[in-house]
Length: 295
Image (cartoon, rainbow, N blue to C red; front, side, top):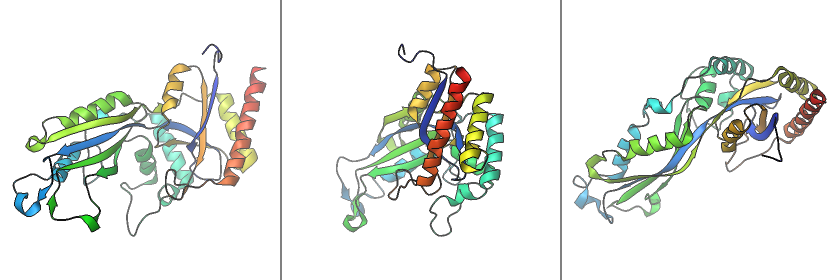
């Protein structure tokens, strides 16, 4: 802090882009509450013909516990503790962004067959992805590959849970709420544990100063030939919340290259190099505008 002094501009380049046609300003990032849910019913596996109907399935108990969090029909997160009001400004920005992007926010994903989105309407897709909580099961233990699966009632099931939470919720508190909710009153008295491994608070950008908004838009028009866009992101950049608290007077330019089909963390992750080159030039122009403003 003594070396940095009073920070008035923070630039982060680890975020996303709605398309590859303009510079996108990230306005918010969701937080996360994540960990491993473990359900144990036996000390070792037993013959399913002998035990089923007497020994409860650890998988079924895990399903019941997940029902405390998520409506399995709609995917809606049930506890009010994991929801937060959506600011009017962000709802309006979602409408504008969806008008620019159209079906891109849906078509950007590699859908299988006739799979459909969880919600209808492009603006709702944006808000579901950026401001509403959502649960993903990202891993599992205790389930053998089908080729190796015998007629055994398994002793335990472990599931890796990743709960995305609204930008304004406290990540550590949400993780504690999740643990309490899952471990309370276990069905059939099973041994249930939730071991948190990540609780991060999201980030909601402060109001953008006129000079920065003008600089962002001018750079987008210069290098892309299109006005800039503003869009929340569904992922988490944990240090953004820390920077927001550390530098409450700072302006933020958070942007990035994770656009349609970029598949971050996926098997065919890629970088749109022409977009990245233009984005680099845009950031340089914003830095120049900042320097000219303060000199």
